[in-house]
Length: 286
Image (cartoon, rainbow, N blue to C red):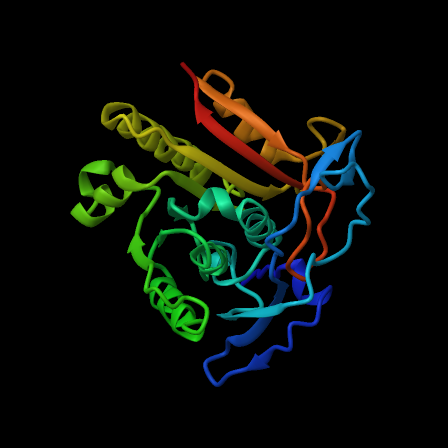
């Protein structure tokens, strides 16, 4: 059976240890943000509050941390959530950068995979709900990863719930519906890789926006993804078909897209921040 492997494993040494269950335990190192950071962008250049140039580098402080994650190194396509992908690390970087905006917020992650982004968010957010479809034992794996990082997540502020994109809202649990209504920010990383799942993901976002409109608690959605380019005979060109399909399917939605420049905030986690990474903030238009 054809298997895929996340590129990050060959680019960075995560001190991975293979277990008897076929998975590995990896250490994703990061630098804690410094509370006196005042970084802005001027003419595509990082400067401090006084306008002095900041040399962009991996990490922005000298205090180190580690998120320990159990994951697979290679899977079939339907189980890619058992791996760690760049989008999860990009989202974690952005949350660290915007930590003061996340401190009193309720975060819900869609398609959370092994839970790295949710664990990173829990360092700063008031409450995090980590969701995914329960295939390949992924929900139990997320719970184990939360335990692996109990030294970081001390406030017991991560809940793990099943959310299957393909199920109608009528089949959602009461706990999940409450989490949807209570959340302020929705995050999702690398969930756009299949047309059917992309369509289902869009429907889920519609559900969040509609319930937010009815309750008066508006939602913000942060989507991180990596454009994956292929040469197609149809276009006779190199394209990113999954990303372009997502844009095509949302073009008539009353959504407001804000593209966040990925070089506009520091890198706290160790990975190759590819130029093909995209970070989008989506809100409901009026």
